[in-house]
Image (cartoon, rainbow, N blue to C red; front, side):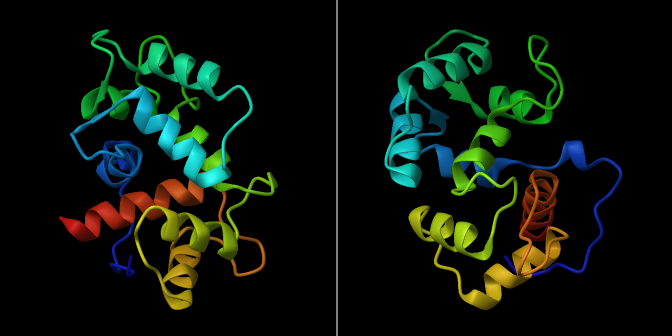
Length: 161
């Protein structure tokens, strides 16, 4: 989660979203199941009203081979908006962002990020969170927008390569 010093390329859509995939893959079996999504939503928000319907809709859209699971390539198509049945801008990452955005203000605050990172099993110091916010183009008071979260994920995966 440390700044890499690299700038995002104009091909950010080609970024590796594996860190986000791994957060949703609760049982770490390499695919996202309905149970994985239930665990995600229950852990972050203590449950979501209409959660089973939301999860069913997400699975219907993402599970293009209809095997009951979302593999990484299917996840990536949804996240980047390249799924044929999904308009650009709607995807699993937006749902993840909404879950992380506890107060619903459209930005991830320091508290939102710290809480989420702890829940996901990634201990992060206040300095780490501040660096993430900075990388995402936000500030300590305003937080990070959805586009900022995508920048954080793209920089994190670029640093891992």
